[in-house]
Length: 114
Image 1: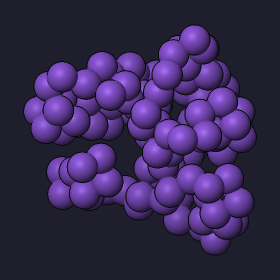
Image 2 (image 1 turned 120 degrees about the vertical axis):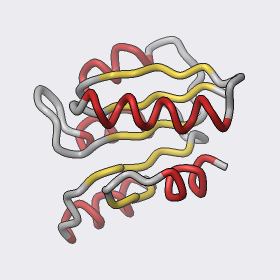
Image 3 (image 1 turned 45 degrees about the vertical axis):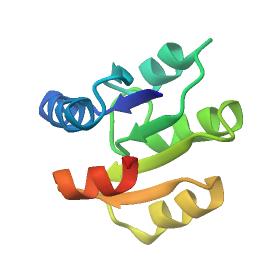
Image 4 (image 1 turned 90 degrees about the horizontal axis):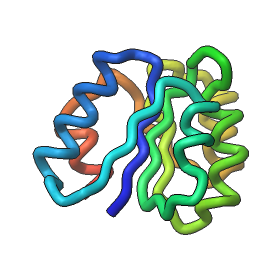
């Protein structure tokens, strides 16, 4: 399995990486700090799981999801964000992206990634 984690918070990246690596040490995990970097990292890869923070500099998670969803139609993609506005939840539905509200907890992440 290949997983891309995107968050502008280094702490969130470290926590998510540790949770997933501990549960799935055989997974290949890529880290990005904004949506544009996520798109650049995703090129040429077969990703199975993409976690996107929503509020990020350069390109937010919604803009990134609009580009990544068509490239990875079978991947599990989720917004992982503290921004719980209805507009963002509706965008998630529109793009067929899941919505996981922050704060990050091991239980939430493991429930989603399996």
